Image (cartoon, rainbow, N blue to C red; front, side, top):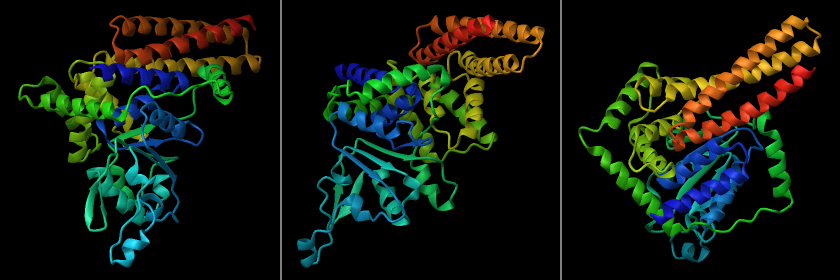
Length: 388
């Protein structure tokens, strides 16, 4: 499919523009291809709005953005009341330029909205429809995105929270890529980026249909992917990570979206594993999900990926502790031991980079790139620290 190649162009443009946001972009595009609501959770100033806004331009979509507060009225989203219709006894909204008229919707600070707004959104998110006047209108929504600086633990929000099968948790970028962030940020502020449509909404609809078609192929009774997925779900439940029945099904649709985004020909265990990572209700659940993925053997080389993630974090901590030791004028042998250990960690990362890069899997591309960045940062710091 030609439009599959085009979604790769959209992804490449976004990852080149927004440094260190590959995980966010993958989740956002999976939300687009699957058509499933997506929630972005992270601190202010982490490009949440800019990524959705840019993606909307790249697919030439009608876009609706609104910053919600507890005082926001439903009419601000759905459109003002049609006074002429009201005089004739019909309650109708004028929807032109509002949420019902959009292809892509982004609602910021979703959990600060009123109960009236949330109740209105529940049916829109699930069924893509809206009562207006005496009729039920179908909406041409391709993607619904929301953002929050933090997750809500309010009982009143549980139904709305469950409507987001994709949840993307992110933080500020790592110091290892700060220079790249600054370079790209300067370029963007200088107006040197150009956004032109790479895909149209009709092609997005075709991608969404392809995702549904791929999901349908999983119905085979002897499907090994489904068996491993069920095993992973059982393990999650044993560890008190509960997915609603609706989300267990939606997760497979998201896996189908990832199979398109990652250029798999059919839905693989890797695609399901990726979808599971975006299903976590909180960051506390992520380690349990990773354990379930490894134990169920859903993903190829998942144990090495997890070790690489841990090693990169330990390498950063080791660099910091070595810098602290030097700044405190610690004994020479203490600093030397720290540097020797750092050299060992660098070699471990090099081995993991080779193991993960040897199969050319698109699922390992991001982790290999991050290992490269970590190696460059660790190598430069090692040489500077050794010189001190």
